[in-house]
Length: 274
Image (cartoon, rainbow, N blue to C red):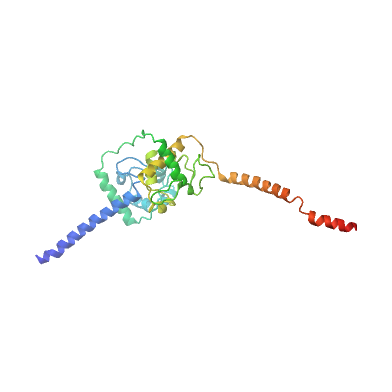
């Protein structure tokens, strides 16, 4: 009996280790991939990953997961097809190594077998309330703080109604963000796990709450549906205002100092007459 104890313990240990590894991979997928991809749930931002191993070579997929830009910048036809389908939104480099990439593909393969037919895209019939739109604007501008400490959106972005002076320009104008991403579902997923190299590290530890995401989506949908163009560049505005302000200041100084030589010139003239 004692001789069987060690092998049995090893088998149990390996079984628990395998289960824990599978759980870790699933957790990684949910935290880093599910905002843009489903497995049998239809397209979000990126493609539905159900059956992806049947559509492309495994090594190609591993290489793409590890470094998406290497495939995209090489002009690879399939990578370009994926980019076009994602409205030119690039998948970011997440720091995944080949081992994790293969584990993710194994997880996707398993879930693909469990998933039924791809679900139809969620109908976006429910209208947001005016209160949600207003709350979203407050979250965007920082008038209302996110509960997990995320920075306000206008520190890097702006929209048409906020204008070039009311927002930042580190990131793109978000007036038409919903159209660029491909709809309400895609925008909601993106805000849940922002998939950009700049935003991902910031929001990883400061995730937005579901009601905050809904409010932001409501505001950005209203901006998108307003038909307004992106906010004008602040460069021209800044230059114009700067020129006008400089002229105004020069005129003011000229008025205030119009008699600036009186104290020296008049006494010198009077002295020369003596």
